[in-house]
Image (cartoon, rainbow, N blue to C red; front, top):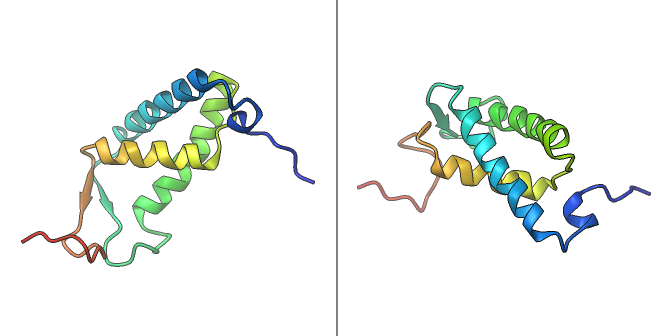
Length: 109
């Protein structure tokens, strides 16, 4: 049986700490994006796991887990990591969307 290890699950009432960690994670991701030139989002195949964005995602997720452990002594849930990462992507000016990025709802007329 797998032990529960995520701080959010172990101490759900400590909302202030969870929010502080999430805000710091978003800042952490924004700072890491600054280390890279502009990054193309997806392209025609969003499931191309060798695409630069997808490789960046995997690397930064692993580094963020290590960062949280070292700096906060905190184990974030995968959902916390994913949410803060994509909030940072949405705020960052480092990402470029291709004209044909596979998003059928986007209308760039």
